[in-house]
Image (cartoon, rainbow, N blue to C red):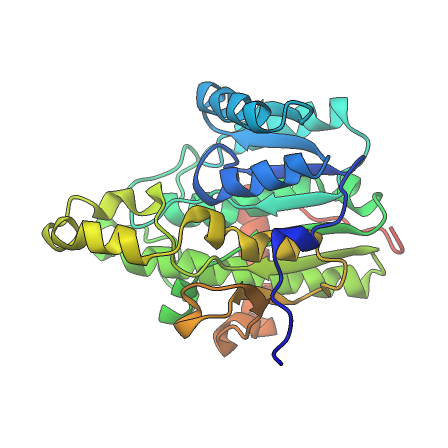
Length: 312
C-alpha cells in the first residue's frame, strides 16, 4: 500500500493561531484562507484592494459564520504600503504564527513598482522580502512560527542573474523569463531565511511550496493570446482547481511534521497536480552564494535589514 495522501482533513485545530495570507482574496490565497478560517485561526487577509478583501471576507463568513477574519490593506508594489501594513499589524497583534507569502503576478507587461523595481520581481520577491523582514521581530518572538514562501514550477526555467537583475530596460524584458526569475528568487530567499533561522537559533521555520498548475486569474495576461483562447475550454477542464492547487501551501503552513527548508508540491505527473508531497527543487535554487548575494541586493533595494536576536 502507498503512503496515505495528505488532505485538509489532516489539518489540526488552529484556534488561537494568528495567520497572515498575502493575496488572500482570490485564487490559491482565497482557497487557503477559507480552509484556515474554518479551522479556527485568527486570519488576516493582506489584500491590495480593500473592497475585494471585504468581498472575500463575506464569502468566508457565509461558509463559516464563526470565522475570525480581518482585512489589512497592503500593496506589495509599494514599500511604504508594506511598512504601513507591518505597523498596523503590530498595533493589533503581539504574535504571528504563520505568514503565507502567497500573492503574486505572472507574465505581466513591462512595468515598474512605485519604487522603480520591475513589477514581477518587485511584487513576487522584493515585496515579500520586505514584508517578512518588517514582521521578523514578531515572528521570531512567537514560538514555532512559520514562514511559507509560495514559488512555482517556473523556477526551473531560469538561472538567477545579477546582471540586469530587475530588467532595467523594457527592451530586455521577457514576461515569462521575468516571472521564472522571480519564482527562483522566492526559493533562494526561503532557503537563506531558513539558514539564518538556524544560525541564529531562532525557533521559527521557513518552508516553500508550489501549487503545480491550476486555473486561476494569475495567468490573466496570457488569456488574450490566440492559442490560449483556442484551448481555453480544454485548459480549464484539465488543469487542477485552485482548491486542489492550494493543498501544497496549506500542508507547508500547518502540517506539524514539516521541517524547515522543505519544499512541497503536487505528487502527480510532472508535479502539475495531486496530493501535496515533499518535492525537490532545481539545484539553482539552493546555491548559498547566489542566495546570499540576492539577500544583500534585496536589503539594499528595499532598505529592510534583517536583525536576528540569538535564540529569539
